[in-house]
Image (cartoon, rainbow, N blue to C red):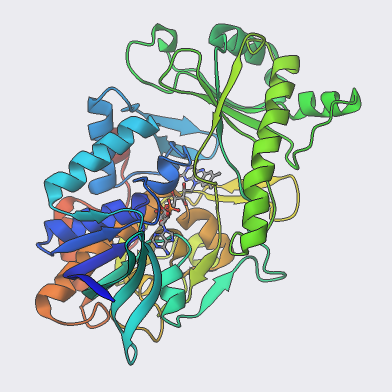
Length: 461
Ligand SMILES: Cc1cc2nc3c(=O)[nH]c(=O)nc-3n(C[C@H](O)[C@H](O)[C@H](O)COP(=O)(O)OP(=O)(O)OC[C@H]3O[C@@H](n4cnc5c(N)ncnc54)[C@H](O)[C@@H]3O)c2cc1C
């Protein structure tokens, strides 16, 4: 088998978590490789069009990316209030991808696209490298430390780490959803329709001056139409989606509306169910488009543009770590000596079996312990992003991009620091990671005094 190379740190998966982790590792001086199965950088935040960070974006690479995207005219630099709390602005996925490419290049991260991690090289409990599937055939890559940012915890699972999947009572996971885009929407008419039907809205955001379209801002964001969907069903409209509301947000193009409404229940780790989901979300998108044209003002001359290229998988494996962040920890705003970031992302759970969803604020937030990034029984490996060690309800919060970025920032720095000291990430004192994060201004969540203070929230982008 071909030896592709030897690195201090290999990060697997180039979603927001992997991008942040690899840049963080490279900036700590590590020779870093970022491996990605697809040809896209950003994973769900670009290819899935999940462009609204839910929760406070702490200092670090993710915030820099948003600021850089804003500088390119493709992100809303303002912090917004919602019915569940404060969130930071949306961005355009293509300009975000440009910001990612520039940042990776400047940081000296080597990127390998179209390469899937298929197995690990192990020396007892220690991961030493990876087997990759590439177009050139199988390849081997060796590393002092590996960071699993695959979202699905693929590398950790291949290493023999234990995993939790779904809710405790039946193992069912949150549904899959793909965004789609509509062009040619008459936004003022749409806004007017929403304003005339306040009872049928969960949320409506139309920032002051939005219609001028001078800068990229979230000119329109709404969730609702539950009554209208009911009415359509009553009138015989074939609404095929197991969801009772629609979320619409504008984009960079004039008359562009991004729609979040599709929903497919199933196990995204099962190849047949995943395939079925990819086909079904497309059929549901066509159904929702027909509904909007018929029942909502402003869509009458619109065209269906495209479905997001990356399937919107919310939940698969949660790798069992040295500590499992519990639902109770999130509820009680727990703080930890080894916390690597304070997270205030709300618990956002889409019903794994039905039509509803919950969005619950988490007050001042909770600390994410470093131990939740260390897969139990495996050395030389960290997990970050969607697949960290948390219980099912806690996952409803940690799956949000600000939390993924926090764990990516910590895991990348930890992997590099461990490589420099020639020790494993488990042997690395949490204090060393915390010092690196504190130097960036990250609020760690170690004690009750750690707060995402109002002035910091206001400064976020
Ligand atoms: C429909 C939907 C709506 C959401 N809404 C919001 C929201 O409003 N706000 C918010 O903050 N968050 C939201 N989220 C959550 C958030 O978008 C994701 O949890 C987050 O982006 C995950 O980032 P990640 O980097 O951990 O994973 P991903 O973005 O999934 O990236 C993982 C990457 O790893 C690659 N990969 C996988 N396996 C391998 C392998 N074996 N080898 C090599 N590469 C591999 C994949 O190709 C992918 O590029 C939403 C998610 C979904 C699906």
